[in-house]
Structure formats: C-alpha cells, structure tokens
Amino acid sequence: MSFSEYDVNRRTRKGNFLSQIGQLIDWKTIERKIAQHYAPGSDAAGRPAYSGLLLFKMLLVGIWNGGLSDESVEDMANSNLHVMRFLGLSLEDDVPDHSVLSRFRTRLTAADAWDGLLAQINAQIQMHNITIKQGCHVDASITHSAHKPKSRIKR
Image (cartoon, rainbow, N blue to C red):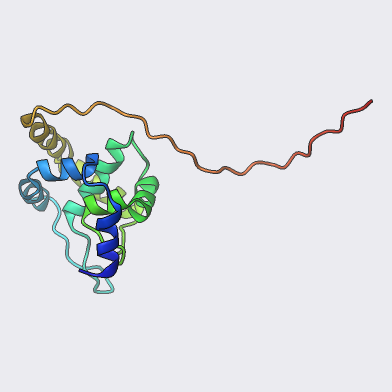
C-alpha cells in the first residue's frame, strides 16, 4: 500500500453511500455481462484500455448524482475521494475522460445491453430491500460574468 493509498483510506468515511453500495452489489456478474459487449484491448499507442466495469461504475456515479454530464463525472472521479474509492482508482491512476464514457455508453446502448445492466443493478439493490430515491446534487461552480461597476449614488 502506497502512502497516498493509506491517506485516501484514512480520509474517506467508511459508511458513505458509494462504499455501502459497492459492497452490496455482486460486481463479478455485472463484469461478465459487460464483457459480452465490451472487450478492452489496447489503443493505437499500445496502452491498455480501461476496464468495462470501471467505465460502467463511472456512468452509475453520474446517474446516482442526479444525471451528471460525462464531463462532471470525469471531474468527480479526479477530485472526490469517495468516488475514487468506489471506482477502485488510486491517486496515481489515470481517469477515463468524458469522450471514453460517451463511446462506452453508446456501445452498450447499440448492443441493447445498457437497460439490462441497469435492471441487474436495480434487482441486486432491491434484493437487499433498499430503495434508492432520486437526490439532488448541487453544483456550486464559479461562473464568469461581465464586470459591472457599482453605480455612484447621486446626491
């Protein structure tokens, strides 16, 4: 275990939603189902492709956080320790970018596997008598606006 791995373990709360759900779901069956439609190899430069399970978990993070965009999911995977833990990533690992997520979702949808995978996740969650209701993820991003100086009060 690296020092950064130790630090991530120390700084993440053990009872959060993602760690709990990560323990309840049988990811091996999900991974086998994904492997029927997505077989990662390597890219043109010879780097290994991302696992299908990692990409699917990233898409779940987006759904469970109120339908985040792929860019927002990528940002969360890079900055949120709980999300990193759920995805099985360490601080040193590369995070798939939003275009990879989009292509992965498109591939699963074209193969008519996306809805089946989500149904499997829901069935496994319901087996534990858990209901996940829609929540609200508040985006407190800073936005740029044109500078308008305060007007002077005339007396």
